[in-house]
Length: 461
Image (cartoon, rainbow, N blue to C red; front, side):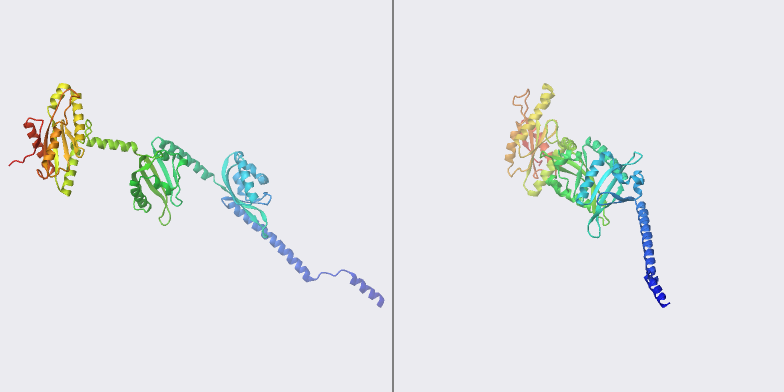
């Protein structure tokens, strides 16, 4: 019996041992943790996909062989493709952009560099969307290259706005080309300045011939205009005046100068009020300046003789009197009348009379280089001598020369001498009106004396 029991015990000990309850608990715990981790990973993946799908950009990832391993669901909304088309994403790139995009992506990924490429993507319905695709290399925990992560951004609205703006700029440029008005845009932070072709054409330059930076602009501004230009720009930047509004000269390509009207205002400031951007126009004022100068000249000069007219004579006389008062001394005024001019005009015609007036004007200018010669009207001229000295005899000798300064000398039919009246300031008058009157009295005395002579004003006793 004992032997049999012993054998049974041996047989029982030969069977595998039954797992302990603690071991079963460990396995159950491990299975539960794996299940929770799987569920958590699935939940995170679901949340990430939901989050990425809700973003206004497309999120994507690719492995080290450039195979796309993840892309957010809004990619399919953007392109109109189906999920099984993921491996052929290059097919969504517009055919005209496909080679360029592929070359840029391959070059960047070969160097494992960040990249950004903009292109058109062709939707399944044939429509076009502009996108910006950006990517950056990613590395695993051991530092080994593990592919790329990136984003695709729909920039169709921005591109449409850019194209619209470019269209407007083109139309504006075409319109401005015919008006000689240029446009400039100054990025104050960087100093970069964009100038339209019409703005550069005003100076005779092409776009590649002028550096678009504010630092070099002073080189083109006339030295006499630079201080006022800088003052106006600075005041506008500081907000002390609403806009730049001035006229100045710019150096042209050929070395000459052109007058321009500059208008500009600050269109962007930061939170502290610092100017960031200024936009303005530049108008060629050369022709207008020439017209204005011509009009001013005509307003102050006699067209026939090109001498100062009566109005300008009054200005010159007052200026000379002020100068005489300031420095002391005396000045002289001669009034000069051609003798028998009416007879010449009536006998030989107005053309001969006009020629006589022009010749008299030229000879008077030559005879009195230090004085101011003016035509007061008809055959009457005036000569202002700003420095008459102490001796009236010298002035009267000059007046005697003026008697014959208007003669024809046989160059044209008809001859004419002149009558001259002379007065001194401040000897004979205290103001301009009395000064002219004194010279006129002397002129009348010369005519009364038989003409062809000069007389000095003699105050009544």
